[in-house]
Image (cartoon, rainbow over all chains, first blue to last red; front, side):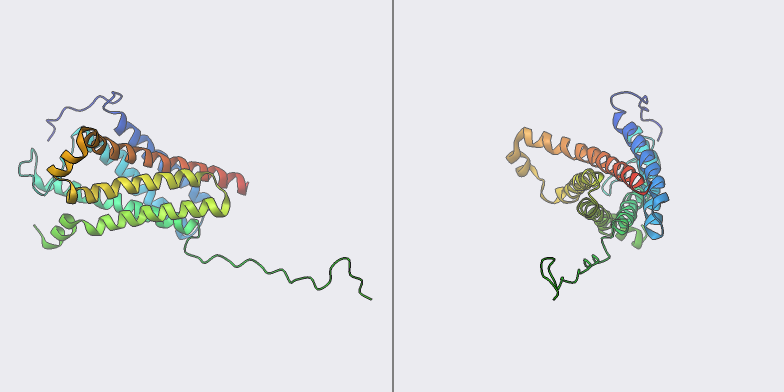
Length: 136
Length: 113
């Protein structure tokens, strides 16, 4: 399982994992700051989704890229480690990435008030008199 | 393998539908933010969500239509595009969403201060 060569951290091949680590942490940070100005389910969903995504992007994806976790494929027959471990990580990846985006998207949609119908513009009663008209 | 696990993992439709739905919601929310509040972060967020969505749909759909005939039809340039473009879209999509969210958060803080 550990037979794959680990990439040195700042090499060209490792740019994408490092980018993902930075993005994942940054996403979590911004979501936390955003949650301070929002409230209720919107903030909870945003932070929850960002937490899942940050774990997925900052921890799991680099581990996959470094070869510490084996890729799982339905047709793959030979694994270096155990097939069950690969399957478990694959399941975790599916859950983290998809549930993370779903929760994050739901939170953001609640925050942007996508689901609430737009409040109708307050109707200004039409003036019965123009300013030039005299009352008398 | 456990039957439930098999259904969930091998068909994968359930989770993929969740992910695609979430990305669609992000795009929708971003467009709404731009239209209603003129928050500039929304544009970047919409761009990021759309590129992530395109890449993800490509990964979902490509096994069904990519075969040898298709590969010879699109030629070497098409093949290299097909290999190179989805990771690029995924990378820049994530960057777009994070950048857009940062912009929106700054805008929101400036507004409430």
